[in-house]
Length: 482
Length: 94
Image (tube, each protein chain N blue to C red):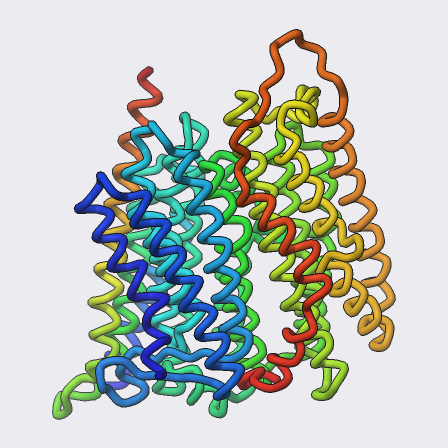
């Protein structure tokens, strides 16, 4: 049964090759793969929920030599989320790229990106993680370059170089760990790491590398250009998934591996950076002139919340409180994933139908594209954290736990961040509902794209009202860290 | 013997740092791509030095496997960077 774990990596990898040699059927191949990955992801969630933590070493090698895969509750849920968002973006991409020459270039790279996301989530070996990070970075760069114009190319080049620098720093940390401990297997390393200078240096290198790759303030400078200029389905995956799986990796390293080395001071540095990211990202989102740029800056802010959770979680003692916070972190990550993919897909629809995404000129949007506006507004509810969205519950837990630890500044930052999010989203809705100045004939959507609506509904309704099983799953099969 | 490992390891570290510095400077794209390659050569040198276990013993095969994988990744990344650079130039000419 454990052979299930290889499928989320192997299937999109093989399908990517198939899409390359059979360009006439790329849409069908891509959507069918997306559907299959959702089924596999659900099966893995069921397997982990029923039988506990799953692990597998490929090729019959012993642990430490073969490629080791590992899935606990956190992995399984993240896997299912990526599968669902991947499927939504895939169906959206069929119409987005219809009739464009980039269609046949998009699919093989897109499937490669999905394979990389799964590989990163499932790997239990530091070197495999490096390879997965590179695969993720290279396919994301190539997908960004499919965007239109010189701006997309320029963004892709910067993204590539910073990504390579990040990966090299990661690799250097891997070298240090191997030099000192003689193994790269994360399960073995978890019990071996000691607080000594070489471990601290490795931790600093890992953390810097992953901060750069998941755009934590002040290393966020590359993100807006990349996420705003990539094609819409790609932006959705970059913002909702790519930065989030990097965050997942950082969480795994800090909680599972480096836990004996972490001090409260180190954790609070990340917390303060997270708080700065929330305020700065939201401020820039308010000033953004384009819808996709607004969504990109909002991602920087939302990642800041994840780091606030993170800074509290790594110093919390074991127990029920920590369980609550851990579940809330996962719920927040999921809600943001679904809401942000909805927002980017809706922005792509706006850009295609209206020919631009300048916020100030969005007058008439509500009349022309009512379904898309509905998705945008629902996504906005989840991004602000209004009930009944999942992020409302998550922020509530964050504030409650922060107060119990005496970190009152967290409460202040969360309240201020939510207020700023209200401003940038209500400004957007205000422009969208205004009648519009030009006399251009209104576009009326006949065949609305349903993927953004579905994603936004999951973020606001499903995760808000049905999130109890998440905590249950984490409590039962949380894995090493909990 | 230890000193040989140390010399190669420290040279690798030096290359890694110099390369990183070059990659982050506001130079031309080609120079930055080359700097990334210098930097990765530094990391590979550290790994190769790490594998050395004395003249009378076989080297540790695992770091060698890592270097081979790393080389493949580095050359693919360089190829992608060069393609992007050429496209960017074509845009600049328009």
